[in-house]
Amino acid sequence: MSTVPTLDSIDLLEDTWAHAVPHEQFALLRREDPVHWHELPDGEGFFAVTRHADIVALSRDPELWSVQRGSFFIRDQTPEALESLGLTLVGMDPPRHTRYRRLVSTAFAPRMVAKLLDDIERRAALLADSVEPGADVDFVERLAARLPLQVICEMIGVPAADEDRIFDWSNRMVGFQDPDFRTSEEDGQTAAAEIYLYCDELAAARVKDPRHDVMSALVHGEVDGERLSTHEINMFFVTLCVAGNETTRNLLAGTLRTLIEHPDALAELRAGIDDDALWTSATEEFLRWNGSIHNFRRTATRDTEIRGVPIRAGQKAVLFYTSANRDEDVFTDPGTLDLRRTPNDHLTFGGGGPHFCLGANLARSQIKALIRALVRRYPRIEPAGEARRMRSDFINGVKYLPVRFS
Image (cartoon, rainbow, N blue to C red; front, side, top):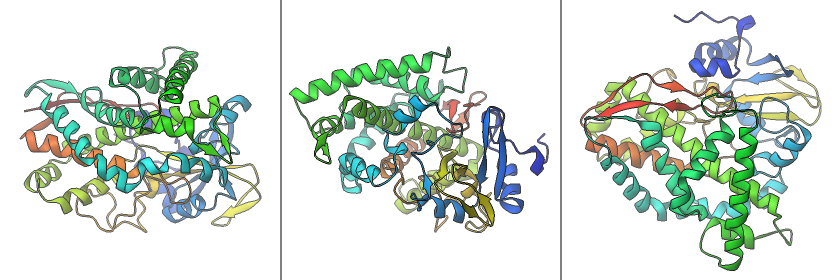
């Protein structure tokens, strides 16, 4: 039985998310304190920004609200870590971000994703067919992890035989707050070193033998007349592998868990299996319901304010997309899953501006393809045990989801 939250009891750190999404806390904050000062036990606190309109406004003003100055994580980083994060697309500010994003944006454009659609649906069908009817499976490892991993590896140029290595490295690098993923303090750093070495080998191969993949675009592309450094290519590679794999995996797992918890919605999808309009609107509602990233941090570049709350230069504002997606000012009856909801201005892919998710259309295509393939094949989809959430104040992950398809 949950305790009714008070402003003094607000806790939006990793232990809270390990148990459940704190929707009651967010509802209280949106209502009473939408720019809430949140202490940190191990560093300087932050302002939790929880209203849709504020998150959109901050996202679209990168000159005032910098990513690069303090990174996108809640906690402050070491100077070395901050330097490396500043070489990732998500860790850069414009205009540098704009120039680097241009190197890979073509591969993720809607027309390019449309060309991949047949392949995504083929892979989704094969995965759905691979499940033995009546058997208990961990949906996360067996299905949700596989499709995005296969798709992003092929786009980047990683051979299919190496997909499991990317899967392992990704888990160890992003699961640093969860004991199930990180076996020691040094393990995340070890995984990073291993994936960088692998990236170097793949890049060297593409220098000699360029192909129509993202890695070839990185090693042969130029920014301001210069080729990318080895470290820049490493950071690009890691960002694409992790963001293109981990986030969609969690969206898929969250979607299936939602359908198990809402049998009426599952029945509606089954009845409308060939209704493309329903599946399109349902996918957007699953995205609103189950964002894969809780938040992104911004750092003020000068003294400012949000809703009259003064913010000093250098202080952090953490944008909670999960809260924005239930904002009563934007969504009618936001606590109800409505597969035909329209419009659906969710912020699962960010609040707009330069950092809007590069892989948004790719994620949409994979959710629709895999969930539809499973609903089409299996009359019954039911839980086979207790789901387990990831302990993370950044990633909204379901790390274990036992399911029975029959």
